[in-house]
Length: 231
Picture 1 (cartoon, rainbow, N blue to C red):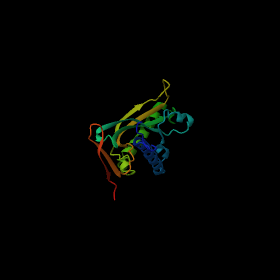
Picture 2: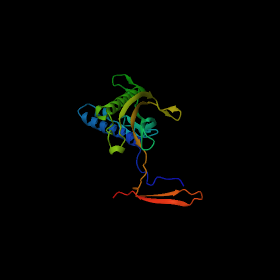
Picture 3: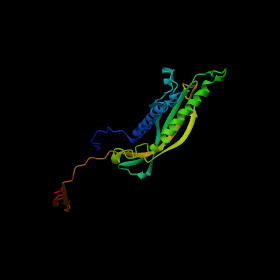
Picture 4: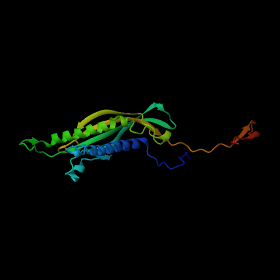
């Protein structure tokens, strides 16, 4: 019978912690920015709605069409493991790609001066504003290590680098038909951190018994017991 892990694996892996931390940092910073912008003509320009691992987050615009603030969706895409960083027993170096998608929606309307404000263009401007906030929040000096450099002692994520890898604008697809007037921008962050594997729980060794066979018929020639317990 194969050996099994002797305890319940009920922890989060580090990539889950890092994903949630990115979302928390964005959410807390946008809330703080709204407060700081209280004296501005429109503090809502700093508002973001933050989610994790949503498949079709733009549907939230349908649920609440009166709220034009950008929707942010943080999700884990992939990870790679460098064999030269870590070991096969306990710690592995995880380089994860975390996407932060910023979605924006706008309605076409007049500009109040006889002109026209196209909804798709306004949605693009709104998505770019949201992406600007996200980039500044995550790349701020306070978040150089996502505030996870040394969490939970030696077995925490131990983030040692976060880097903005790319920024891509796209129009989300909705059942093979582009979602009208919804524009999104994806910021892909590469984060390097630690993943840890379960370790066997062992008891202290107290006694070693050795049987030594020398006779050709298997007759016991000698045996010995060694007490190795700590006094």
